[in-house]
Length: 115
Image (cartoon, rainbow, N blue to C red; front, side, top):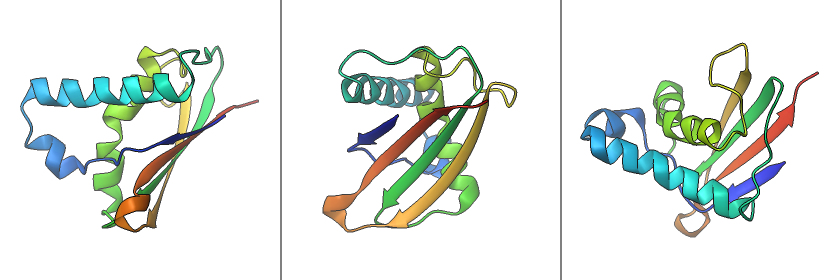
Protein backbone atom coordinates (compact mmCIF):
# COMPACT_ATOMS: atom_id res chain seq x y z
CA UNK A 1 0.00 0.00 0.00
CA UNK A 2 1.29 3.44 -0.92
CA UNK A 3 -0.04 6.60 0.77
CA UNK A 4 0.65 10.16 -0.38
CA UNK A 5 0.34 12.73 2.42
CA UNK A 6 0.54 16.48 1.76
CA UNK A 7 2.42 17.07 5.00
CA UNK A 8 6.14 17.29 5.70
CA UNK A 9 7.97 15.66 8.56
CA UNK A 10 9.34 18.03 11.17
CA UNK A 11 12.92 17.54 12.29
CA UNK A 12 13.67 15.98 15.64
CA UNK A 13 15.27 19.29 16.66
CA UNK A 14 11.92 21.04 16.12
CA UNK A 15 10.01 18.33 17.97
CA UNK A 16 12.39 18.40 20.95
CA UNK A 17 11.62 22.10 21.45
CA UNK A 18 7.85 21.56 21.43
CA UNK A 19 5.60 21.34 24.48
CA UNK A 20 4.30 17.80 25.02
CA UNK A 21 0.75 18.85 24.08
CA UNK A 22 1.92 20.20 20.70
CA UNK A 23 3.86 16.97 20.05
CA UNK A 24 0.70 15.00 20.79
CA UNK A 25 -1.34 17.22 18.44
CA UNK A 26 1.31 16.76 15.73
CA UNK A 27 1.01 12.96 16.01
CA UNK A 28 -2.80 13.16 15.92
CA UNK A 29 -2.55 15.25 12.74
CA UNK A 30 -0.57 12.41 11.14
CA UNK A 31 -3.27 9.99 12.24
CA UNK A 32 -5.97 12.12 10.60
CA UNK A 33 -3.96 12.49 7.37
CA UNK A 34 -3.32 8.74 7.14
CA UNK A 35 -6.98 8.00 7.95
CA UNK A 36 -8.02 10.29 5.11
CA UNK A 37 -5.50 8.79 2.68
CA UNK A 38 -6.98 5.32 3.34
CA UNK A 39 -10.57 6.62 2.89
CA UNK A 40 -11.28 5.80 6.53
CA UNK A 41 -10.41 2.12 6.06
CA UNK A 42 -6.81 1.58 7.20
CA UNK A 43 -5.71 -2.04 6.80
CA UNK A 44 -4.97 -3.92 10.03
CA UNK A 45 -1.58 -5.54 10.42
CA UNK A 46 -1.15 -8.95 12.01
CA UNK A 47 2.46 -9.61 10.96
CA UNK A 48 5.73 -7.78 10.79
CA UNK A 49 5.50 -4.87 8.38
CA UNK A 50 8.02 -3.04 6.23
CA UNK A 51 7.43 0.72 6.20
CA UNK A 52 9.22 2.99 3.78
CA UNK A 53 9.00 6.72 4.46
CA UNK A 54 10.00 9.00 1.58
CA UNK A 55 10.15 12.64 2.62
CA UNK A 56 9.97 15.11 -0.26
CA UNK A 57 11.36 18.20 1.46
CA UNK A 58 12.45 21.70 0.55
CA UNK A 59 15.47 21.41 2.84
CA UNK A 60 17.03 18.01 3.52
CA UNK A 61 17.65 16.93 7.11
CA UNK A 62 20.41 14.96 8.80
CA UNK A 63 19.30 11.33 8.89
CA UNK A 64 18.98 11.31 12.71
CA UNK A 65 16.70 14.38 12.54
CA UNK A 66 14.54 12.68 9.90
CA UNK A 67 14.27 9.44 11.87
CA UNK A 68 13.44 11.28 15.10
CA UNK A 69 10.87 13.39 13.27
CA UNK A 70 9.06 10.26 12.09
CA UNK A 71 8.12 9.21 15.65
CA UNK A 72 4.67 10.83 15.45
CA UNK A 73 4.04 9.22 12.07
CA UNK A 74 4.94 5.73 13.36
CA UNK A 75 2.83 6.25 16.48
CA UNK A 76 -0.10 7.19 14.24
CA UNK A 77 0.36 4.01 12.16
CA UNK A 78 0.35 2.00 15.39
CA UNK A 79 -2.82 3.68 16.73
CA UNK A 80 -4.57 2.99 13.42
CA UNK A 81 -3.52 -0.68 13.58
CA UNK A 82 -1.51 -0.47 10.36
CA UNK A 83 1.53 -1.76 12.25
CA UNK A 84 1.32 -4.03 15.29
CA UNK A 85 3.93 -2.02 17.21
CA UNK A 86 6.89 0.22 16.48
CA UNK A 87 9.39 -2.18 18.07
CA UNK A 88 11.93 -3.80 15.69
CA UNK A 89 10.33 -7.24 15.95
CA UNK A 90 7.11 -5.84 14.43
CA UNK A 91 8.30 -3.24 11.95
CA UNK A 92 11.27 -2.57 9.70
CA UNK A 93 11.48 1.08 8.69
CA UNK A 94 13.39 2.55 5.78
CA UNK A 95 13.86 6.32 5.45
CA UNK A 96 14.61 8.33 2.33
CA UNK A 97 14.66 12.03 1.45
CA UNK A 98 14.22 13.78 -1.87
CA UNK A 99 14.78 17.49 -2.40
CA UNK A 100 11.54 19.06 -3.61
CA UNK A 101 10.12 22.43 -4.59
CA UNK A 102 7.80 24.13 -2.08
CA UNK A 103 4.62 23.07 -3.88
CA UNK A 104 5.80 19.46 -4.09
CA UNK A 105 6.68 18.98 -0.41
CA UNK A 106 4.96 15.80 0.77
CA UNK A 107 5.49 12.45 2.46
CA UNK A 108 5.05 9.07 0.81
CA UNK A 109 4.43 6.08 3.08
CA UNK A 110 4.73 2.58 1.67
CA UNK A 111 3.58 -0.40 3.75
CA UNK A 112 4.29 -4.01 2.90
CA UNK A 113 3.69 -7.18 4.89
CA UNK A 114 6.93 -9.10 5.47
CA UNK A 115 7.20 -12.84 4.93
